[in-house]
Image 1: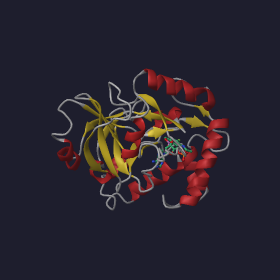
Image 2: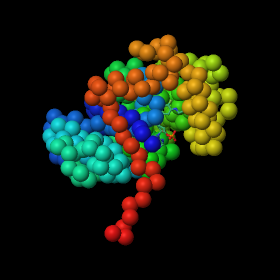
Image 3: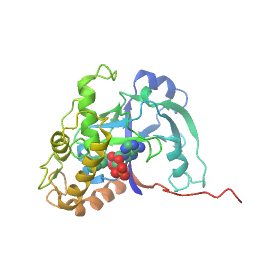
Length: 264
Ligand code: ZZB
């Protein structure tokens, strides 16, 4: 599985995270949340970035004193075998400077490349984030991802329960892709049509995701951004390359089904 890993720079930590980071990440260094996505062409529509509240993450040194990543342990290990870090690269080596619980970073303000929300987007909790997939960090595009749309609606509805400020969740959803069957807000259309009431409706959400991927990829046309008017199929590699060239993203491969022999 070849993902695009995106770099979302921390602009402001909440108190709980600030105390964890102080003394571990050098003053003036940048920390990035690094979600893995299969839909780089939707990055204009990022509204939030999700972490699993019960997942333990690490902050890893990419370049000492300069650059640090907030990701899962598993992703850090994988990246250490993909020339991603450390810099200068040492095969299989990586340094964790501190451990942080997902719940402790809820409310962090990050700058998301390409997002229309230029002042930044918030880190919010999503129960269904898997620690065992991607980087354990998921960027939210509620226009085109049914999981993200359902989670966002739930966060708005139950802001107190999730211990967040309602306005962190309740931000504008922008049409990015136009499709013949589902209009220009594919995720909203499918969630409403399939009467999905909560992010816990896992089976229906998986079905909606499948439909959204297929329609988006084969029939979708960009209706926002530099590649507006192009098909999704054409725009996808172009947006990806642009993000990589700008230093805002990199290729990250999931070693699926990889078995390491211990027999020696
Ligand atoms: C932004 C985005 C925009 C995504 C979209 C999807 C869609 P898949 O399809 O199952 O292989 N994701 C990544 N890591 C995790 C994780 N650890 N736990 C839960 N979800 C995760 O998964 C790839 C997609 O699942 C990724 O692409 C990411 O969400 C999410 F408009 O990034 B995506 C129809 C889907 N649309």
